[in-house]
Length: 228
Image 1: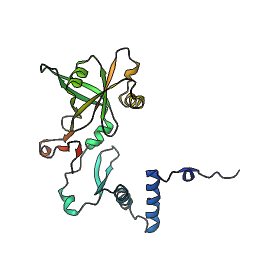
Image 2: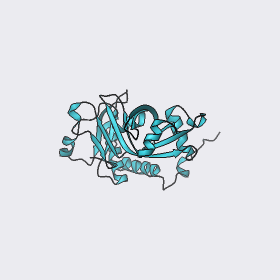
Image 3: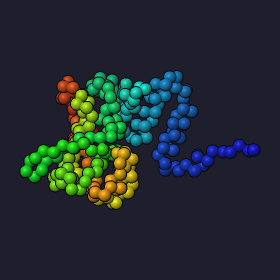
């Protein structure tokens, strides 16, 4: 029986960023000596990523067997800049927590100032949080009225606080997004008798800290832009 040939390369599109990155990585490996250590291989990857994205610098997180960050392989940073960096996070870091957590606390207040706090499951799409709550709930009423949300993730010694504008999305308006929320949250409000509404929270400001010694540098995003 004749051997079958892998069709992947033949069907790859030149405009595909991942395909171009693999070609560049292959060319990099052919052009020079092979990496002597795993660290050398990771350095090649992060250097290539910075080049392809035309970024000022790049960093690749190195995690242990429990998916906790042990350190970073960086590119484009001087030794002085590296010395000025904060201690690498002992947990997932704010982005890791947004990607891996399932639930968050949503704070809101009524028009007459009555505070309300509720836990909700969420989906993170890489740029915004999506939660679902009954349309008649106090949370939906409060957040749609103010158009702003403040939510918290994680335990009190590894907290992430996200604040930003809120957009109400009616069920059925974005099926793909709704499917992603159902997968991440573990429930599908579209199947319930009570009417729900999706609330999309786009981060404008993010704080992250573990203990008092990190309070001074707790802001990692302001004005919707990540801070260096």
